[in-house]
View 1 (tube, rainbow over the protein chains, first blue to last red):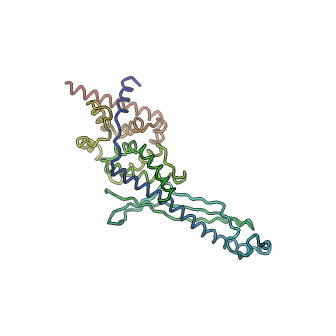
View 2: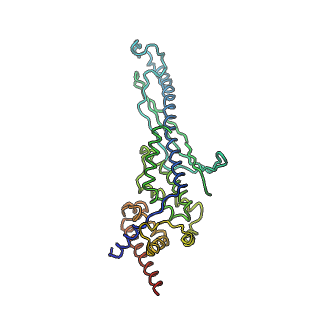
Amino acid sequence: MGDSLHDLESRLERLVPRGISNHGRERLEEQIDDLADAVTQRKAGGRIKKLAGVAALAAVLAAVAVIAGLQQSRPKPTASEGADAPAGTDAGIEPIDYLRVVAESPSDGGYVQGEGNQPFRTWIYPVREEETVVDQQTGWEVTIVSEHEEKILTPVTRF
Amino acid sequence: MAKSAQHLAKTWKEWLSTNGSKLLLYARQRTSNLEDAEDLLQDALIRLWGYQAERNYRPPDLPLAYSVLRLCAMDHGRKTGRRERKHRKIVEFNAYDDHWLDHGAEEDEEAELLRGAVEELSEKLREVIVMKVWGGLTFAQIAEILKISQNTAASRYRYALEQLEKRLNHIKEARNG
């Protein structure tokens, strides 16, 4: 590349991109706050669902153990192992793996009206969660797969 | 807002503070006005957030951001049907001081001419200039974003500079009579 083009490059670099408008920056930062809040809420919801899933899985594992005739082979619980806990509860059920996959590209869920007639655009993300737990006494592992959609709303200023 | 959400938001806001202007410049040269460009940037931000979910929501690297912004711009162009009006609007917005670039330290007339010349480049040449000069991307990164070879990216950049130089010389000759 010749000197004149190098010189032109330097002159271009001295031009400065205009910044985001104040209103635009506020909007983007609010969007970031909303997205970050949604992540925290989903994680909290995931933990609650996980505990519910563990209880459900405990019932499944207990049922499987009865059907397979494994109840007879289980050692009787001693006082130190929580003998007061009845069979079929989540005693001895341990979560070992949790996977959450969010789709890369959201689908456009169209426009909705929010508070104060503010229009919002809806983005829909398919989410897949897999929880694996193990019954420590029998060694059985169970994986529950659940799929759902999560929506993110963004305020619309122009159509 | 919980502490982890605060931290997450803070990292992304810092990323936006560092890279927002560069990305807005790209969005601006793909749309017909500042508001559309900021809408585009917001759409891209949401998509990038989704992509980064598998990476613990850390802010994206710049090539990915440009790539997503470009996809959003293509979607935007298809949906709004404004592409055919974009070139006409470039001249109009110049008249209303709706420029994409500021002079910076350069106050002279030549900087003004250069700014106008950049804004009048064809879309193909303009986006390479924008990504290379102000985005700081390498030709390899630009090639990946545009799905072209590295040589083509470099050639397009050189050709864009030559077109700018030609345009400036032409304007100076016209003014000098």
